[in-house]
Amino acid sequence: MKRKVIVVMGGWSPEAPVSLRSGLNAFQELPAGKYSKRAVVLNADRRAAFLPEGVSPDEENLKDSVYRNLTEVFSEVLAWGAEAALLALHGRGGEDGAFQGFLSTLGIPFTHSGVTASAVAMEKDIAKLLYAAAGVRIPRGVTVCAMDDPAEEVRKASLSYPLIAKPLASGSSFGLWLLQNENELREKTPEFWKNGSLYLLEEFVKGREFTCVVITRKGCPCAMPVTEIVSRTGVLFDFKAKYTKGSSEEITPARISGELSDKIREAAVKCHQALRCAGVSRTDFMVNDKEEVFALETNTIPGMSAASILPGVARNVGIDFSQILDEMVEEAIRSANNNC
Figure 1: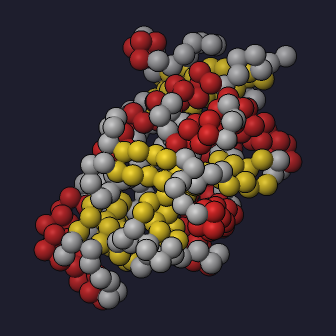
Figure 2: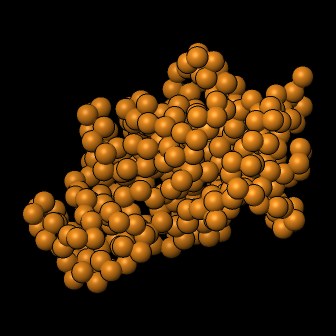
């Protein structure tokens, strides 16, 4: 008897198009011989489509999909007998614990992190306090809101330019700015509040950027090989560099010494554990010329499209991505059963 699994994608954050690509690849890669799978596609108006069994959530099929309210759709999901949800959601509403809480209330086990870890990881300033408590370096920074004068807050915190500015609760390097001086900060400040009510300003760490995937296997977090990220469009690995073909290069394993690789991998596991992540996470780092490792942020649902880092890392170590997905679903069901 095949396990019944829903693959959830889309949503109402600016990262919904990325989520659709992640969801499509995850749906196609989830082993058909073991799982009976159906796609649940969340729309910007907070309705959802529940595709027929085995129907791929590709662009053509989504054109003909009927979107209904969430309660109606998930009543049907429960009636179908879904045993787990494979999450391919990114950003607010999908990666911040809100949808995880919804599934928990319905009693549907889900992949990746739980409510607490998802919510904390999304709030970058809170997450960094936990990194620091776990002994991981973080850039110096300050959180500002629309009522603040960001330039004044930077002065109060004695921060040095250049600064990185990023929305406090967003992913995919969305709304990211590199600011060289106070004039640039003041110029860009009106743009901040288009991306959220809170912004994080932190000192720019000059150096090389890396990321490291951590997978929970049999209850234990395991760091995968480190990936080096090289942006070809500028200094920042921003939204454009991530999702424009040819704009960036991800090199796995990273071109670094074994000693530095071990430092990054150890820091990635510490971040994963500090946030109480489950399933799969991916933490981004900067490394300066002294080989000091600084944690930037943790993604609790890393991208899963064919071009994303997670499937690429799996290929690099000789593991089929379908196997990773299989382990994630089984881990979600096992964890839910143990918590009963």
